Length: 111
Image: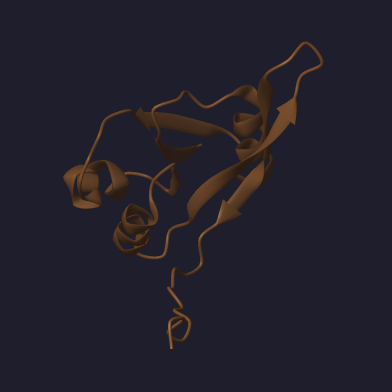
């Protein structure tokens, strides 16, 4: 059984769980639902996980990647789908492993 940390305010839905189980087999999910400024605030939980799944801003994603020390750090994509009766649903569209985070800045625009 793979130990998965889920850093998100929302519980993982069935489609997300099914997607992880398709890749990793049976999983045990430890959800962390709290606000943090730095990933090291939950370093112990990260070190106890074999797979790290996160919903976080890019700066925190970079910290999670560093603390993961080679273990997979995953983000999920959701498609926004219009409902016939109005409003939207968010439909799980897959898990993606963060390989690298880099910021590329263009030349100055106001020259």
